Image (tube, rainbow, N blue to C red; front, top):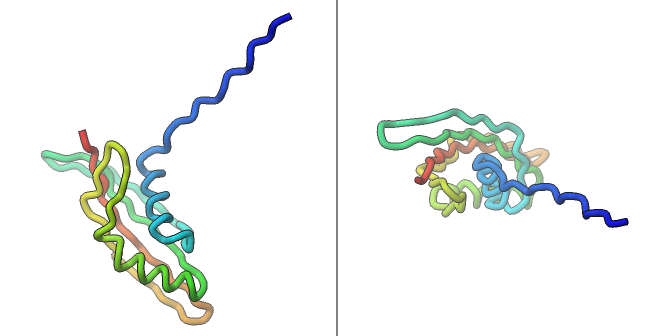
Length: 115
């Protein structure tokens, strides 16, 4: 008797929002957790895409140091999201707490479709 191997599950690449989340977490050096992510469609006469607002929480002294680097680097970071361009990335709000060490950052990213 001959049995065929079961079909392998199809691995789909993450959606652009998932890749953006992964890129921001990578930029955070593994020291952050995304606690909120809101996505809104955005379009102009020449471009279409999505505006993302994410809240990242950094906890602990080492994480706070990484958060400060994240704030300094996010605007100039070269994101690699196939089929998309990051037109703008910025930190729009920061809440810093000393005890226990905790920093909450709200980042906003405009992701445009690149066709």
